[in-house]
Image 1 (cartoon, helix red, strand yellow):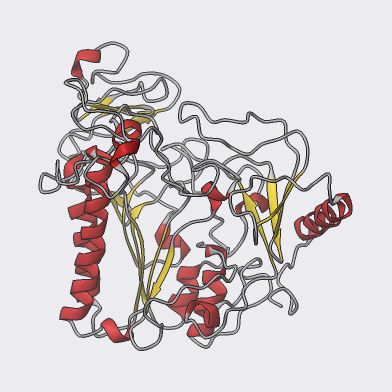
Image 2 (spheres, rainbow, N blue to C red):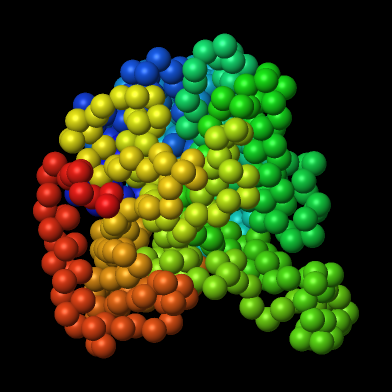
Length: 460
């Protein structure tokens, strides 16, 4: 999204730990650069997870933390350095840890335990949330994390107030720039693990912490929308709500999401299909949760359940309320689309995979991309979407992700689906159409080999 360039084009790009250096080259033009050049104030707020600092040990946590968002075109940043289940569990404002006390310097390590805080292995009684094997590091706020951390007393965040803090940062930036064009990249923590909703949402959904955090996420959006309306700038503010991947239930902590996501008896399902209530389970539920609906897979998957994501565009007076578009677009297209929105010409090497989809985003056109390349959370396999067809490269990686048991869609043989008639990817047509498989594989190889990628014919 930030670079307009497929992540798989840069070897080594993957899910970074909290001590990873910045993975985006500072000489690459980003979406923030594009908006800044158009006169917009720019901010990055929320979950970052793209690395900070340079060198093998990443950031200098007790000093100036750079390079980071400010070196990528943002004027202001207020971040969680990685993900909330990873150390360091501190906010970073611009180039420094927020509220850091010099008496308690921050040190993190992803190889071995450090510091005197309890860990999941040496003091399991200190935990208030049961993890899987991957979250067995330092316990902070009763929650075991990935990695180990020492120091930071007074700067460590409160998990139950993350949404209020981050949303407050967004609202503050909007108010500060209400008379000036602004661009905000807000990556909400909700509903990422560990799921610790604010007190006002605890128990309100009836669907456990994951359900409560869904309500919390709705609240965040409402706070932002309300601010725009109160300041009378909603009609000239474009808002896009989207996600980084498909859904997941159990993703590192035993918070009951798998069980509680099964619909309760109070919902409009046929009660005759539900098991009878018992003393052990007074709220009978359907036997299977399907957060991705008719789609196969979920987070981590090359299947549609992992790569087909929510994408809502709202610009009062410009977008048509309630309109649903079936055009193929990608987050990678935002850079070129925002350049068009601000009447800028960009070089072919800027956002090389990004196409101008502004007419589609505004509902003025239903003609989307001719093709798109998708990637799972590992280097392979890649998938090619082309004119309603989807081709998935053969791959020998595991078919399911541990510990989520998400179906990944990996197969040692090619896969070919006609998404126009089979959105659930139930019928692999590769054997029926071998020439189509070969043609799409050659097209994928051609796209991968190109350096200056965007051409005039790409969006036909």
